[in-house]
Image 1 (cartoon, helix red, strand yellow):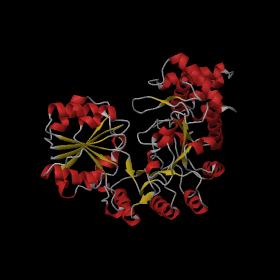
Image 2 (cartoon, one colour):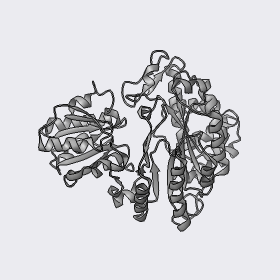
Image 3 (cartoon, rainbow, N blue to C red):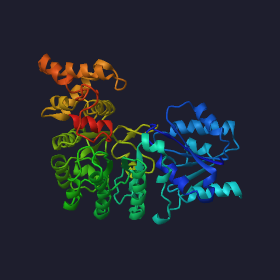
Image 4 (tube, rainbow, N blue to C red):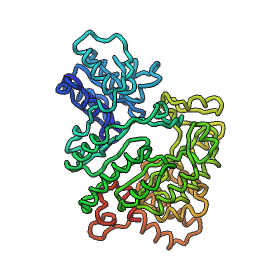
Length: 498
Protein backbone atom coordinates (compact mmCIF):
# COMPACT_ATOMS: atom_id res chain seq x y z
CA UNK A 1 0.00 0.00 0.00
CA UNK A 2 1.20 3.51 -0.83
CA UNK A 3 -0.40 5.21 2.20
CA UNK A 4 -0.76 3.67 5.65
CA UNK A 5 -3.02 5.16 8.30
CA UNK A 6 -1.91 4.11 11.76
CA UNK A 7 -2.35 4.79 15.46
CA UNK A 8 -1.72 3.14 18.81
CA UNK A 9 -5.04 2.60 20.54
CA UNK A 10 -5.27 2.42 24.33
CA UNK A 11 -6.89 -1.03 24.02
CA UNK A 12 -7.68 -3.47 21.24
CA UNK A 13 -11.40 -2.92 21.84
CA UNK A 14 -11.02 0.75 20.87
CA UNK A 15 -11.43 1.09 17.10
CA UNK A 16 -10.11 4.40 15.73
CA UNK A 17 -12.93 6.51 14.35
CA UNK A 18 -10.45 9.18 13.20
CA UNK A 19 -8.52 6.83 10.90
CA UNK A 20 -11.73 5.56 9.37
CA UNK A 21 -12.82 9.14 8.61
CA UNK A 22 -9.53 9.73 6.81
CA UNK A 23 -9.86 6.57 4.74
CA UNK A 24 -13.48 7.35 3.86
CA UNK A 25 -12.42 10.74 2.51
CA UNK A 26 -9.28 9.78 0.54
CA UNK A 27 -11.09 10.08 -2.78
CA UNK A 28 -8.90 8.91 -5.72
CA UNK A 29 -6.27 7.70 -3.23
CA UNK A 30 -8.63 5.31 -1.46
CA UNK A 31 -7.42 2.20 -3.29
CA UNK A 32 -3.83 3.00 -2.30
CA UNK A 33 -4.65 3.52 1.39
CA UNK A 34 -5.15 1.12 4.27
CA UNK A 35 -5.53 1.22 8.06
CA UNK A 36 -3.13 -0.52 10.46
CA UNK A 37 -4.02 -0.14 14.13
CA UNK A 38 -1.87 -1.19 17.06
CA UNK A 39 -2.17 -1.14 20.84
CA UNK A 40 0.07 0.76 23.24
CA UNK A 41 2.63 -1.42 24.96
CA UNK A 42 3.76 -3.22 21.81
CA UNK A 43 7.47 -3.45 21.00
CA UNK A 44 8.61 -0.51 18.85
CA UNK A 45 10.72 -2.62 16.50
CA UNK A 46 7.78 -4.94 15.88
CA UNK A 47 5.51 -2.03 14.96
CA UNK A 48 8.06 -0.51 12.58
CA UNK A 49 8.69 -3.88 10.96
CA UNK A 50 4.98 -4.47 10.42
CA UNK A 51 4.51 -1.01 8.90
CA UNK A 52 7.47 -1.33 6.55
CA UNK A 53 6.32 -4.79 5.40
CA UNK A 54 3.68 -2.92 3.35
CA UNK A 55 6.38 -0.82 1.62
CA UNK A 56 4.56 2.48 2.20
CA UNK A 57 5.52 5.82 0.73
CA UNK A 58 3.48 7.71 3.34
CA UNK A 59 2.56 6.78 6.91
CA UNK A 60 0.03 8.94 8.72
CA UNK A 61 -0.14 8.66 12.52
CA UNK A 62 -3.03 9.66 14.77
CA UNK A 63 -1.41 11.17 17.86
CA UNK A 64 -3.23 11.43 21.17
CA UNK A 65 -2.32 12.15 24.77
CA UNK A 66 -2.26 8.43 25.61
CA UNK A 67 0.01 7.36 22.75
CA UNK A 68 2.31 10.31 22.00
CA UNK A 69 5.33 8.94 23.87
CA UNK A 70 5.20 5.54 22.19
CA UNK A 71 4.35 7.03 18.80
CA UNK A 72 7.38 9.31 19.12
CA UNK A 73 9.59 6.24 19.48
CA UNK A 74 7.94 4.61 16.46
CA UNK A 75 8.43 7.71 14.30
CA UNK A 76 12.05 8.09 15.45
CA UNK A 77 12.87 4.50 14.51
CA UNK A 78 10.91 4.65 11.26
CA UNK A 79 12.83 7.72 10.11
CA UNK A 80 16.14 6.07 11.02
CA UNK A 81 15.61 2.79 9.16
CA UNK A 82 13.47 4.15 6.31
CA UNK A 83 14.12 7.89 5.90
CA UNK A 84 12.53 7.81 2.46
CA UNK A 85 9.09 7.17 4.00
CA UNK A 86 7.13 10.39 4.52
CA UNK A 87 5.58 10.69 7.97
CA UNK A 88 2.49 12.84 8.50
CA UNK A 89 1.09 13.50 11.97
CA UNK A 90 -2.44 14.46 12.97
CA UNK A 91 -4.66 14.36 16.01
CA UNK A 92 -5.27 16.56 19.07
CA UNK A 93 -1.87 16.10 20.67
CA UNK A 94 -0.04 17.66 17.71
CA UNK A 95 -2.71 20.17 16.73
CA UNK A 96 -1.62 22.75 19.32
CA UNK A 97 1.71 23.97 20.68
CA UNK A 98 3.51 22.10 17.92
CA UNK A 99 6.76 24.03 18.30
CA UNK A 100 9.17 22.18 20.52
CA UNK A 101 7.44 18.79 20.36
CA UNK A 102 9.97 16.04 19.68
CA UNK A 103 7.56 14.04 17.53
CA UNK A 104 6.91 17.09 15.35
CA UNK A 105 10.63 17.62 14.83
CA UNK A 106 10.97 14.00 13.68
CA UNK A 107 8.04 14.03 11.26
CA UNK A 108 7.86 15.47 7.76
CA UNK A 109 4.43 17.09 7.99
CA UNK A 110 1.70 17.87 10.54
CA UNK A 111 -2.01 18.41 9.91
CA UNK A 112 -3.61 20.35 12.74
CA UNK A 113 -7.32 20.13 13.50
CA UNK A 114 -9.72 18.67 10.93
CA UNK A 115 -7.97 16.26 8.58
CA UNK A 116 -10.86 15.07 6.38
CA UNK A 117 -9.94 17.37 3.46
CA UNK A 118 -6.41 18.49 4.24
CA UNK A 119 -4.79 15.07 4.74
CA UNK A 120 -5.86 13.60 1.35
CA UNK A 121 -4.83 16.85 -0.36
CA UNK A 122 -1.41 16.76 1.30
CA UNK A 123 -0.89 13.12 0.33
CA UNK A 124 -1.74 13.90 -3.28
CA UNK A 125 0.80 16.73 -3.38
CA UNK A 126 3.50 14.53 -1.83
CA UNK A 127 2.90 11.73 -4.33
CA UNK A 128 2.38 13.80 -7.48
CA UNK A 129 4.58 16.75 -6.62
CA UNK A 130 5.69 19.33 -6.06
CA UNK A 131 6.09 18.48 -2.38
CA UNK A 132 4.79 21.18 -0.05
CA UNK A 133 7.42 23.33 1.61
CA UNK A 134 5.43 24.06 4.75
CA UNK A 135 5.64 21.49 7.52
CA UNK A 136 2.49 22.43 9.44
CA UNK A 137 -0.83 22.49 7.59
CA UNK A 138 -3.94 23.86 9.26
CA UNK A 139 -6.85 21.51 8.66
CA UNK A 140 -9.67 22.88 6.52
CA UNK A 141 -13.15 22.40 7.95
CA UNK A 142 -15.55 21.44 5.13
CA UNK A 143 -19.35 21.62 5.25
CA UNK A 144 -20.58 18.66 7.27
CA UNK A 145 -22.58 17.28 4.34
CA UNK A 146 -19.38 17.01 2.29
CA UNK A 147 -17.63 14.71 4.76
CA UNK A 148 -17.98 11.06 3.77
CA UNK A 149 -19.18 9.01 6.74
CA UNK A 150 -16.85 6.16 7.72
CA UNK A 151 -19.12 3.55 9.27
CA UNK A 152 -18.98 1.04 6.43
CA UNK A 153 -15.26 0.77 7.20
CA UNK A 154 -15.95 -0.95 10.50
CA UNK A 155 -15.14 -4.57 9.68
CA UNK A 156 -17.18 -7.59 10.72
CA UNK A 157 -14.47 -8.28 13.30
CA UNK A 158 -14.82 -4.71 14.64
CA UNK A 159 -18.56 -5.17 14.96
CA UNK A 160 -18.17 -8.49 16.75
CA UNK A 161 -15.39 -7.56 19.17
CA UNK A 162 -14.84 -3.82 19.46
CA UNK A 163 -16.58 -0.67 20.65
CA UNK A 164 -18.07 1.20 17.69
CA UNK A 165 -17.59 4.95 18.06
CA UNK A 166 -20.08 7.13 16.22
CA UNK A 167 -20.90 10.83 16.12
CA UNK A 168 -23.99 12.71 15.06
CA UNK A 169 -22.17 16.03 15.50
CA UNK A 170 -18.77 17.54 16.08
CA UNK A 171 -17.72 20.41 18.29
CA UNK A 172 -19.18 22.03 21.39
CA UNK A 173 -20.63 25.49 22.07
CA UNK A 174 -19.38 25.59 25.67
CA UNK A 175 -16.05 27.08 26.75
CA UNK A 176 -14.88 24.94 29.68
CA UNK A 177 -11.19 25.84 29.81
CA UNK A 178 -9.87 22.37 30.67
CA UNK A 179 -11.39 20.84 27.50
CA UNK A 180 -10.12 20.99 23.91
CA UNK A 181 -13.70 21.48 22.78
CA UNK A 182 -13.56 24.94 24.37
CA UNK A 183 -11.69 25.98 21.22
CA UNK A 184 -14.70 25.18 19.02
CA UNK A 185 -17.06 27.94 18.02
CA UNK A 186 -20.17 25.80 18.14
CA UNK A 187 -21.42 22.25 17.52
CA UNK A 188 -21.87 21.15 13.91
CA UNK A 189 -24.39 18.37 13.16
CA UNK A 190 -24.04 15.82 10.39
CA UNK A 191 -27.10 15.47 8.12
CA UNK A 192 -29.37 13.39 10.33
CA UNK A 193 -31.02 11.20 7.71
CA UNK A 194 -27.68 10.15 6.28
CA UNK A 195 -26.32 9.45 9.76
CA UNK A 196 -29.31 7.31 10.76
CA UNK A 197 -29.04 5.39 7.50
CA UNK A 198 -25.47 4.50 8.48
CA UNK A 199 -26.64 3.39 11.93
CA UNK A 200 -29.29 1.23 10.27
CA UNK A 201 -26.61 -0.39 8.14
CA UNK A 202 -24.38 -1.06 11.15
CA UNK A 203 -27.29 -2.60 13.03
CA UNK A 204 -28.18 -4.80 10.05
CA UNK A 205 -24.58 -6.05 10.05
CA UNK A 206 -24.86 -7.05 13.71
CA UNK A 207 -23.72 -3.97 15.64
CA UNK A 208 -25.39 -3.74 19.02
CA UNK A 209 -23.13 -1.49 21.10
CA UNK A 210 -22.89 2.15 19.97
CA UNK A 211 -20.78 4.77 21.74
CA UNK A 212 -21.57 8.33 20.72
CA UNK A 213 -18.65 10.73 21.07
CA UNK A 214 -20.75 13.89 20.65
CA UNK A 215 -19.89 16.39 23.38
CA UNK A 216 -23.45 17.69 23.68
CA UNK A 217 -25.82 14.97 22.57
CA UNK A 218 -28.91 16.60 24.12
CA UNK A 219 -28.21 20.14 22.93
CA UNK A 220 -30.67 19.81 20.03
CA UNK A 221 -33.56 17.91 21.58
CA UNK A 222 -35.34 17.18 18.27
CA UNK A 223 -32.23 15.45 16.97
CA UNK A 224 -31.75 13.61 20.27
CA UNK A 225 -35.30 12.33 20.17
CA UNK A 226 -34.94 10.96 16.64
CA UNK A 227 -31.72 9.16 17.50
CA UNK A 228 -33.14 7.71 20.70
CA UNK A 229 -36.26 6.62 18.83
CA UNK A 230 -34.01 4.71 16.43
CA UNK A 231 -32.78 2.61 19.34
CA UNK A 232 -36.23 2.30 20.92
CA UNK A 233 -37.57 0.96 17.64
CA UNK A 234 -34.83 -1.69 17.59
CA UNK A 235 -35.59 -2.68 21.17
CA UNK A 236 -39.32 -2.93 20.48
CA UNK A 237 -38.81 -4.95 17.31
CA UNK A 238 -36.45 -7.46 18.95
CA UNK A 239 -36.50 -7.27 22.77
CA UNK A 240 -34.38 -10.43 23.00
CA UNK A 241 -31.74 -8.97 20.69
CA UNK A 242 -31.06 -5.70 22.53
CA UNK A 243 -28.96 -2.69 21.62
CA UNK A 244 -26.86 -0.56 23.95
CA UNK A 245 -26.17 3.15 23.43
CA UNK A 246 -23.84 5.53 25.27
CA UNK A 247 -24.34 9.31 25.11
CA UNK A 248 -22.62 12.31 26.69
CA UNK A 249 -25.22 14.65 28.19
CA UNK A 250 -25.30 18.31 29.17
CA UNK A 251 -26.44 17.89 32.80
CA UNK A 252 -28.80 20.85 33.16
CA UNK A 253 -30.78 20.40 29.95
CA UNK A 254 -33.35 17.61 30.22
CA UNK A 255 -36.76 18.78 28.98
CA UNK A 256 -39.87 16.68 29.50
CA UNK A 257 -39.92 15.31 25.95
CA UNK A 258 -36.45 13.88 26.44
CA UNK A 259 -37.35 12.46 29.85
CA UNK A 260 -40.36 10.73 28.32
CA UNK A 261 -38.13 9.04 25.75
CA UNK A 262 -35.45 8.10 28.29
CA UNK A 263 -38.02 6.48 30.58
CA UNK A 264 -38.93 3.99 27.83
CA UNK A 265 -35.50 2.34 27.77
CA UNK A 266 -35.18 -0.98 29.63
CA UNK A 267 -32.29 -1.78 32.01
CA UNK A 268 -28.95 -2.30 30.31
CA UNK A 269 -29.79 -0.43 27.10
CA UNK A 270 -28.74 3.15 27.85
CA UNK A 271 -25.80 4.90 29.50
CA UNK A 272 -25.31 8.62 29.98
CA UNK A 273 -21.95 10.19 30.68
CA UNK A 274 -22.54 13.45 32.53
CA UNK A 275 -19.78 15.95 33.18
CA UNK A 276 -20.37 17.79 36.44
CA UNK A 277 -16.63 18.43 37.04
CA UNK A 278 -17.33 20.72 40.01
CA UNK A 279 -20.36 21.86 42.01
CA UNK A 280 -18.48 24.96 43.21
CA UNK A 281 -19.90 28.07 41.44
CA UNK A 282 -16.70 30.07 41.96
CA UNK A 283 -14.58 27.34 40.40
CA UNK A 284 -17.05 26.97 37.54
CA UNK A 285 -16.78 30.71 36.83
CA UNK A 286 -12.98 30.56 36.88
CA UNK A 287 -12.90 27.87 34.17
CA UNK A 288 -15.76 29.42 32.14
CA UNK A 289 -18.13 26.54 32.81
CA UNK A 290 -21.81 27.44 32.55
CA UNK A 291 -23.96 25.09 34.58
CA UNK A 292 -27.16 25.39 36.59
CA UNK A 293 -26.18 23.21 39.55
CA UNK A 294 -29.69 22.91 40.93
CA UNK A 295 -31.09 21.75 37.57
CA UNK A 296 -28.15 19.41 37.05
CA UNK A 297 -28.70 17.79 40.46
CA UNK A 298 -32.44 17.50 39.86
CA UNK A 299 -31.85 15.84 36.49
CA UNK A 300 -29.36 13.34 37.89
CA UNK A 301 -31.79 12.52 40.69
CA UNK A 302 -34.59 12.03 38.17
CA UNK A 303 -32.44 9.77 36.00
CA UNK A 304 -31.50 7.65 39.02
CA UNK A 305 -35.02 7.41 40.43
CA UNK A 306 -37.30 7.54 37.39
CA UNK A 307 -35.35 5.77 34.65
CA UNK A 308 -33.33 2.61 34.07
CA UNK A 309 -30.38 4.57 32.68
CA UNK A 310 -26.88 3.73 33.83
CA UNK A 311 -25.11 6.95 34.87
CA UNK A 312 -21.40 7.71 34.63
CA UNK A 313 -20.83 11.13 36.22
CA UNK A 314 -17.50 12.99 36.02
CA UNK A 315 -15.76 15.08 38.68
CA UNK A 316 -12.33 16.69 38.28
CA UNK A 317 -9.97 17.25 41.21
CA UNK A 318 -7.30 19.95 41.01
CA UNK A 319 -9.25 22.67 39.21
CA UNK A 320 -8.01 26.20 39.95
CA UNK A 321 -9.56 27.63 43.11
CA UNK A 322 -10.90 24.31 44.42
CA UNK A 323 -9.59 22.80 47.65
CA UNK A 324 -10.17 19.31 49.02
CA UNK A 325 -13.11 20.37 51.18
CA UNK A 326 -14.92 21.86 48.18
CA UNK A 327 -14.25 18.79 46.05
CA UNK A 328 -15.43 16.53 48.89
CA UNK A 329 -18.75 18.38 49.12
CA UNK A 330 -19.33 17.84 45.40
CA UNK A 331 -18.37 14.18 45.68
CA UNK A 332 -20.72 13.61 48.62
CA UNK A 333 -23.53 15.32 46.74
CA UNK A 334 -23.07 13.00 43.73
CA UNK A 335 -23.00 9.91 45.94
CA UNK A 336 -26.24 11.02 47.56
CA UNK A 337 -27.86 11.53 44.15
CA UNK A 338 -27.23 7.85 43.36
CA UNK A 339 -25.19 7.65 40.14
CA UNK A 340 -23.83 4.14 39.56
CA UNK A 341 -20.37 5.41 38.59
CA UNK A 342 -18.54 8.55 39.66
CA UNK A 343 -15.49 9.05 37.50
CA UNK A 344 -13.01 10.77 39.79
CA UNK A 345 -10.50 12.40 37.46
CA UNK A 346 -7.43 14.54 38.08
CA UNK A 347 -7.07 17.71 36.00
CA UNK A 348 -4.86 17.42 32.91
CA UNK A 349 -3.40 20.37 31.02
CA UNK A 350 -4.26 19.43 27.47
CA UNK A 351 -2.23 21.23 24.82
CA UNK A 352 -3.99 24.34 23.54
CA UNK A 353 -6.57 24.62 26.31
CA UNK A 354 -7.10 28.00 28.02
CA UNK A 355 -6.64 26.45 31.48
CA UNK A 356 -2.99 27.51 31.18
CA UNK A 357 -3.95 31.10 32.04
CA UNK A 358 -4.50 30.02 35.65
CA UNK A 359 -1.05 28.47 36.06
CA UNK A 360 0.64 31.36 37.85
CA UNK A 361 -2.29 32.86 39.83
CA UNK A 362 -3.24 29.47 41.30
CA UNK A 363 0.17 27.86 41.56
CA UNK A 364 -0.72 25.10 39.10
CA UNK A 365 2.14 22.61 38.76
CA UNK A 366 1.77 20.04 35.98
CA UNK A 367 3.63 16.87 35.11
CA UNK A 368 5.78 17.77 32.06
CA UNK A 369 5.08 14.33 30.54
CA UNK A 370 1.78 12.97 29.18
CA UNK A 371 -0.94 12.99 30.34
CA UNK A 372 0.20 16.33 31.90
CA UNK A 373 -1.65 15.73 35.17
CA UNK A 374 -1.72 18.51 37.75
CA UNK A 375 0.69 17.69 40.59
CA UNK A 376 -0.14 20.53 42.95
CA UNK A 377 -2.03 23.83 43.22
CA UNK A 378 -2.02 26.62 45.77
CA UNK A 379 -5.02 24.89 47.36
CA UNK A 380 -3.82 21.25 47.20
CA UNK A 381 -0.19 20.36 47.87
CA UNK A 382 1.66 17.53 46.12
CA UNK A 383 1.28 14.98 48.95
CA UNK A 384 -2.47 15.59 49.17
CA UNK A 385 -2.83 15.38 45.39
CA UNK A 386 -1.16 11.97 45.50
CA UNK A 387 -3.69 10.86 48.11
CA UNK A 388 -6.45 11.97 45.73
CA UNK A 389 -4.83 10.05 42.86
CA UNK A 390 -4.87 6.89 44.99
CA UNK A 391 -8.44 7.58 46.10
CA UNK A 392 -9.46 7.77 42.43
CA UNK A 393 -7.80 4.45 41.62
CA UNK A 394 -9.25 2.57 44.59
CA UNK A 395 -12.65 4.10 43.93
CA UNK A 396 -12.53 2.72 40.42
CA UNK A 397 -11.52 -0.74 41.66
CA UNK A 398 -14.10 -0.96 44.43
CA UNK A 399 -17.08 1.29 43.64
CA UNK A 400 -17.12 1.90 39.90
CA UNK A 401 -16.24 -1.69 39.02
CA UNK A 402 -19.63 -2.90 40.25
CA UNK A 403 -17.94 -5.80 42.06
CA UNK A 404 -18.64 -4.32 45.49
CA UNK A 405 -21.92 -2.52 44.88
CA UNK A 406 -23.55 -3.32 48.23
CA UNK A 407 -20.31 -3.34 50.21
CA UNK A 408 -19.53 0.18 48.97
CA UNK A 409 -22.54 1.52 50.83
CA UNK A 410 -21.15 0.06 54.05
CA UNK A 411 -17.81 1.70 53.32
CA UNK A 412 -19.29 5.16 52.73
CA UNK A 413 -22.08 5.50 55.31
CA UNK A 414 -22.97 9.14 56.01
CA UNK A 415 -19.60 10.70 55.06
CA UNK A 416 -18.68 9.19 51.68
CA UNK A 417 -15.56 11.19 50.84
CA UNK A 418 -14.01 11.15 54.29
CA UNK A 419 -14.74 7.48 54.88
CA UNK A 420 -13.42 6.35 51.51
CA UNK A 421 -10.33 8.54 51.90
CA UNK A 422 -9.64 6.79 55.21
CA UNK A 423 -10.03 3.43 53.48
CA UNK A 424 -7.79 4.59 50.60
CA UNK A 425 -5.03 5.74 52.95
CA UNK A 426 -5.21 2.46 54.89
CA UNK A 427 -5.21 0.12 51.88
CA UNK A 428 -2.20 1.93 50.44
CA UNK A 429 -0.25 1.29 53.66
CA UNK A 430 -1.15 -2.38 53.31
CA UNK A 431 -0.34 -2.84 49.63
CA UNK A 432 1.99 0.01 48.60
CA UNK A 433 0.26 -0.32 45.23
CA UNK A 434 -2.71 0.96 43.27
CA UNK A 435 -2.50 -1.48 40.36
CA UNK A 436 -2.27 -5.23 39.90
CA UNK A 437 -4.18 -5.99 43.06
CA UNK A 438 -5.84 -9.36 42.55
CA UNK A 439 -9.60 -9.36 43.04
CA UNK A 440 -9.44 -11.98 45.78
CA UNK A 441 -6.82 -9.97 47.67
CA UNK A 442 -8.85 -6.79 47.25
CA UNK A 443 -11.94 -8.52 48.63
CA UNK A 444 -10.01 -9.68 51.70
CA UNK A 445 -8.71 -6.17 52.30
CA UNK A 446 -12.20 -4.68 52.00
CA UNK A 447 -13.45 -7.24 54.51
CA UNK A 448 -10.58 -6.51 56.89
CA UNK A 449 -11.32 -2.79 56.74
CA UNK A 450 -15.00 -3.35 57.54
CA UNK A 451 -13.96 -5.35 60.58
CA UNK A 452 -11.53 -2.63 61.69
CA UNK A 453 -14.41 -0.14 61.45
CA UNK A 454 -16.51 -2.22 63.81
CA UNK A 455 -18.47 -4.67 61.65
CA UNK A 456 -18.70 -8.20 63.02
CA UNK A 457 -16.49 -10.65 61.16
CA UNK A 458 -19.41 -12.88 60.19
CA UNK A 459 -21.34 -9.91 58.80
CA UNK A 460 -18.32 -8.55 56.90
CA UNK A 461 -17.55 -11.98 55.48
CA UNK A 462 -21.13 -12.52 54.34
CA UNK A 463 -21.42 -9.06 52.80
CA UNK A 464 -18.21 -9.24 50.79
CA UNK A 465 -18.63 -12.88 49.78
CA UNK A 466 -22.08 -12.26 48.35
CA UNK A 467 -21.05 -9.07 46.62
CA UNK A 468 -17.58 -8.75 45.16
CA UNK A 469 -17.93 -11.34 42.40
CA UNK A 470 -21.42 -10.19 41.55
CA UNK A 471 -24.48 -12.39 41.91
CA UNK A 472 -23.75 -15.39 39.74
CA UNK A 473 -25.78 -18.21 38.32
CA UNK A 474 -24.82 -21.52 39.89
CA UNK A 475 -24.70 -23.24 36.50
CA UNK A 476 -23.29 -20.64 34.11
CA UNK A 477 -21.15 -18.74 36.65
CA UNK A 478 -22.13 -15.53 34.88
CA UNK A 479 -23.82 -12.46 36.42
CA UNK A 480 -27.55 -12.80 36.94
CA UNK A 481 -29.28 -9.94 35.14
CA UNK A 482 -32.59 -9.21 33.55
CA UNK A 483 -33.18 -11.04 30.31
CA UNK A 484 -31.61 -9.46 27.27
CA UNK A 485 -29.12 -6.97 28.75
CA UNK A 486 -25.89 -8.91 28.23
CA UNK A 487 -24.94 -6.60 25.33
CA UNK A 488 -24.08 -3.93 27.90
CA UNK A 489 -20.42 -3.66 28.99
CA UNK A 490 -19.35 -5.83 31.92
CA UNK A 491 -19.37 -3.03 34.48
CA UNK A 492 -22.92 -2.06 33.72
CA UNK A 493 -23.97 -5.70 33.85
CA UNK A 494 -22.44 -6.01 37.31
CA UNK A 495 -24.25 -2.88 38.50
CA UNK A 496 -27.51 -4.33 37.21
CA UNK A 497 -26.84 -7.56 39.08
CA UNK A 498 -26.23 -5.79 42.40
